[in-house]
Each structure stands twice: as C-alpha cells, then as structure tokens.
Length: 243
Image (cartoon, one colour):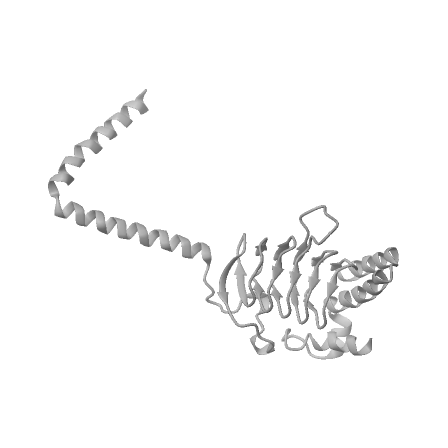
C-alpha cells in the first residue's frame, strides 16, 4: 500500500513543474488527496461494502472538490492537477499514467446500469473543462484539449479539440514525460478545425471570383446582356419594398 502511495506522489513530478517536494504533494495537492480517498472507497466497494464506500467517497469530495465514484476503475500513477470540479462516473475505466485537469467530466449519457462511462487508455491527457460523455474509448496516448466535448471514440495518439471534438493532430503514443502534453495541447500552433473550414470556403470563393472574371473578359457581350437583367430584378425588389 505504501509503495502504491509513493508511486502516486512520484507521478506528480514530470507533470507539474511547480512541485518542489514529496511532502508538498502529500500536504497541498487536492488531486493526490482525492486519489487516496478513491483507493480506500474502491477497496470497500469491491468487498461489497457499498454504503461505506460511498461515504468515504463523499468525504473525499468534501475535502478535495473532486468526485470519483468508488465503482470506477483507475490505474496506477493517476494524476489530477488543480482538481476542482472533476467528476468520474461509476463505470469509467481509466488506464495507467493518465492526467486530468480541473473541471473534467467522465460522464454517462444513459440510464442503463451497464457500461455508460468512458474508457481512457494509458498515458491519456485531458485538458481543463473537457467533457467525455458516454461509453466512448480514448486511445492510448491521446490528448483531449481544454473545453472539448467528446462523444465519439478517439484514436490512439490523436489530439482532439472543439465542440464536438475533432481530430487536429496525431502522434505516436509516448511513455516519455518529456513529451507530456499539458492541458491536452501539444504545440502552440495547433490548427483550429473551424478556422480551417472557413479558410477553405474563402479560398473556394476566391477561385470562383477569378473564374467568373475570366469568363466575363472572354465574352464581354454576355456580361453586358446580363446587366439589364440584374437591374430589372433590382427594380422589382424596390417595388415590393414600397408595397
């Protein structure tokens, strides 16, 4: 048990540059406190002491601001940074070396008693405010950007952002903390899928304008004959407006 606690403390180093000592983690990190309460409540839950497990979980929520259902499955070296507002549901399955930031929800979307919460593979990073909803799978080494809403499976090594979340990058899953993607963002110039779509439309419009200009220059009579038609439409529109 003590070795497991030591591993949880060690997980902070390499994922939080602000950490200074193991004692600081033990005393001042609410994410670490929440994990301790979860380990105890899960131990009780698996031995069918459901009510007592829920009570210990409730105490953990009271002291840390983090709600982890005792029925959830969480691997080793799990790290919650800042922590406030994190919610992890009963059937959530979290792998090893996973990192969550504040405001993350691993939530269910159905009243069914079976599997209804997400599954996170090893080395997944979920940014602040992200919501992962339903029995979706986040592949190993994937990164979920801050405030993303994930309702579909995410491939291993992918980075997703937006509402709903879209893949904006892919990388090979890495176990090296030097490649740790804080808040789920791997580079400062990560492309925005919405901006990319808008830019594509603007480029298409520019090409259409160029093509139209070429057609008009090659057939000036067609251009001149089209002008009165446009004027007629304008006159008709003015008459309707006066009515």
